View (cartoon, rainbow, N blue to C red):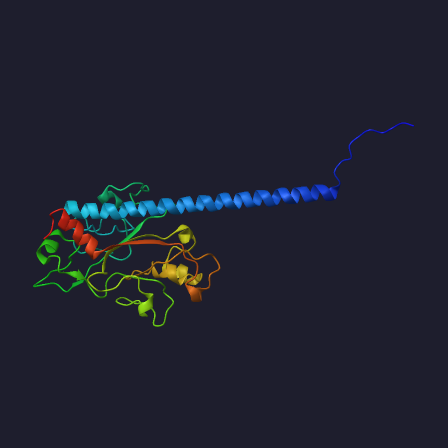
Length: 270
């Protein structure tokens, strides 16, 4: 008898199983790589925001005041040039050209790691001043020197809240419920400046109206041109609007104590 020698090939079922396993492994690897890439991008954005905060404090030490935000329709120069009464105190951008900050886009606006412009807001009102006072305070070298360190940001000025979905809702001067506040209007907790990135998904909802329309009220609150900002941990896609919606903004701020402390240590004030 003739003995047949040979290897049995894979059946179609066996090949399908192998391909399915390979697909699962590749999908898992790609998901892990994507998650790692996204985390690196977020970490890099956080680093740039930290640098921006230090650049603002360094500018204040060198110039005796904070810069105004840049107007998004022009270039990355503070508006108006030379400071004073800011043209867009709550919906402006980090003035990268004024600060000498990098990296920037073709118009000189500072960028986060998603290539979105870094945003910046600065307090415009004051209270608790000893003696006479003149505004603007924090963006005017002469007024800041004259008014002194007793002046605090006004009670309707910059606030950082945990959520925009509360009863009552946050509004200038209040975060609504006391448990919803991250900063407060006491001298130890007031905020003179906010620096933030609108995150990766900003491209899908670049205005307050657009963010509201797709069920992202917390992100909308950071784009609505008022003095109340929202900051909390990222919330994934699919989060209900009743819980604040999807959220990936990164928000930093400069407390008034830190601001005055830097200027005093440098001999700029009192």
